[in-house]
Image (tube, rainbow, N blue to C red; front, side, top):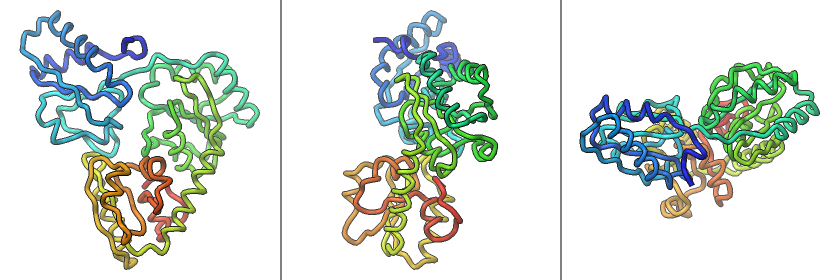
Length: 336
């Protein structure tokens, strides 16, 4: 099984970056699920470097840490390298990575069949959708133009230029929301569509087109279900007096949000403790949690509150949910 069977990447850009920086120590960062291709990728890079005449001794190490996105890069680790090749994510809009980090597109070759696209058109027609906004994850930039062309040929109007979203940043969605009947997310899995659906409070149909599984699904009801859970979590936290605030690192260290959240808790006579951690798991949270803690805020990644800790036995909230709970927002706000 070869990486090139499933993805395409710009090897020329990689070689150019190494040569221009005269790099001898390089770190390779691949997302979870495709780290197994690291050795193949290293072999490809080194063989092409040699063919280009690059005779400098070079070591390419593999970052074994979880790579969830461009917001979470181990700053202590990467300072040991002249070049960090970060695959499959675009630069994070809320944070600028160090200059030795270079982002490399890893574009999936998976594409939906005509049958799946036709099913999408039928679903949109049954919903009376004429105006559609499209958002994508970075891996699927290669196929979006063909999907747009297909939908336009079936009289579905695309009112935005499809843009990349993250799990907590939704590009220009707010600008187009009043102009559309539905939003389509082209991505694997549910998280990006779920986040987008929470952002708009399920006010429009939300559909997911998954090129990996070649399936399309209306997830609006799933969003409504999660939204109800989130409101219930907020109600459970209303009388909480003692809080933990989970603070991340790198692009997930959000000073402004931390300052705002701590200010809210102080103003409302709540006690709190700040926990610094790069990664958050159930074991880590259980180790610091205790009977004296009544509620938790995660300022690092909203995915953790929405997915990983949704069944935790105490309310685990995002900053936007805390602001809504204390009346600083008129309506439910996700994530900030």
